[in-house]
Length: 336
Image (tube, rainbow, N blue to C red; front, side, top):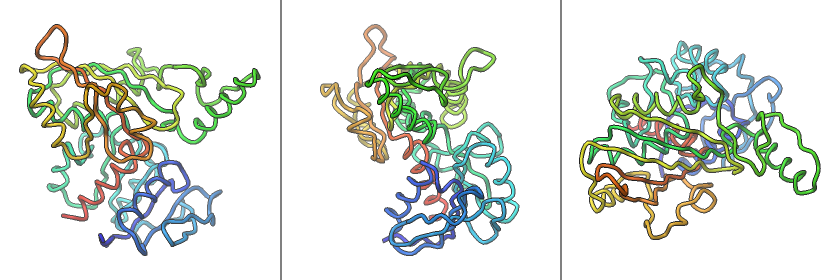
């Protein structure tokens, strides 16, 4: 049994990612914990369970972060921008799941299976940023390819579940589905178009006509894996509750050796490989939702060029894309 020797705060404890983090925390560190659950004033006093313990939610705005060692933030960029520096100033290491700090050069952006060695070189307290959910699963699968063949370009299409937009988006999909099946009119609050029985662009449009979701993947891949990799993304939101999927076309500097690539995938920590003959696997419903590993399949050499390969990747966006990655960062810090 692992020993949780740190005092932990969870900011956004009442949200979808916060609850998954608590589930994973209990799974990996069963037993009593020095845990502080934080949210807005309106949630103060609410009881939330973690294992056999119950904790009262505390008001984030008045919390003293000097009473904890590590704070996990998953309450949006605005909250992180206001309270993460405060936590740091009070001697607390911050693991932030928002987009707030990802582009800041002096703040590490970490996927433990890909660039976790960076954590060995830094001393806490510090702010550590979690990548975008699509980036996290993508780079776990790209790392073995890059190590073997040196990736030069990647083109991806992401198929992103609505849970990436929060609980309101989940509720909207369910309500729109019910009303559509009953031939009733639907309302749109989270997305600008109906998501039930539909596929729509994911994210908000930027000046270059790419969405912020697409640009996150490009920037974060360069920061985490290799700045020389050119990557172009098209991100779409699909009527799936949990589990992002990615179709990736990869160009490398060397000829692709599929047997070696299969072996590398099998050896990669945090990655499950499926046979290319099992073309229905992996899929988000059966191989992502509620599961920790990233799954890769549909591994095919390009039809025309021997330095290219196509793969299909799925993962639970609330786990490896958010809560699990944060927990793995915390474990690496604790093991130092």
